[in-house]
Length: 305
Ligand SMILES: [Zn+2]
Image 1 (cartoon, rainbow, N blue to C red):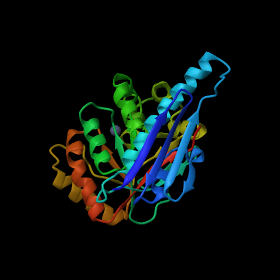
Image 2 (image 1 turned 60 degrees about the vertical axis):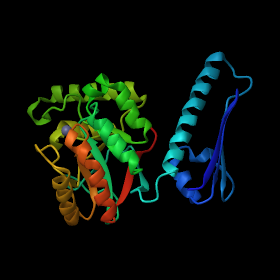
Image 3 (image 1 turned 90 degrees about the horizontal axis):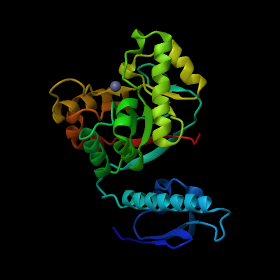
Image 4 (image 1 turned 120 degrees about the vertical axis):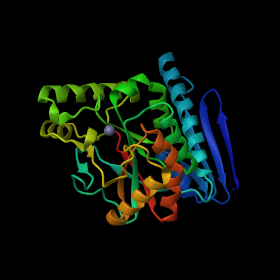
């Protein structure tokens, strides 16, 4: 794939010029999160720049801005990796950005996401977990697709670098309870306390309020549904599961179940678990099956808080 780029970092600016011979420019535009900064000079050349003022108001401001510049350089390289995806990869079809308005989605319990037939959203629960989460990240990267991870607060605090790696790879992250409790068996104050713990863990880890929540065991309670709605947090249920929590599931078994259920739902939110080794092992096969079945992967993101 012909593509040339230069990444320039000097004392004041980080900028990048990308020349594209074969890749349609909108693919790159989509994979860059700060589209407003993107300038195009012609159909095949792009330049993005982020500059620190030559006379910053204070040393603190200067160091903050330099940190931002370094972050942007990382994002640019990530975007290039995305753009440089092999042509036979599954790849992303589009991004769906949801508002932080406390809506609930997933036809097992709620209205559907606005998806076309054949569109799927990949979701993973119960991580981060060393080993299996790394395997899931590798399989997603190999097929150039992004997913949504619903993390538990406890492992998020235990493995902060792994949680950060998930977000850095461009995946969106929501919450899945602090302890993975059966909320239906807890009184209202214990439910709210668990939610407050995972919200706090998320905010410390990612530097922003969590946009979304998935109930452990999909076990919803009125007190938490009200609290989440009040805070504008999306409740993400599912359209289909592949039951990858069952013991001794081979890639072939999980793939057959996924394709069978997709026939019924015509796509939608797929529930999987990055906390499971067998899911990580099956994911390359599952993603290939989605590609062969003509399914399109949609990445769900949320508007900035
Ligand atoms: Zn779970």
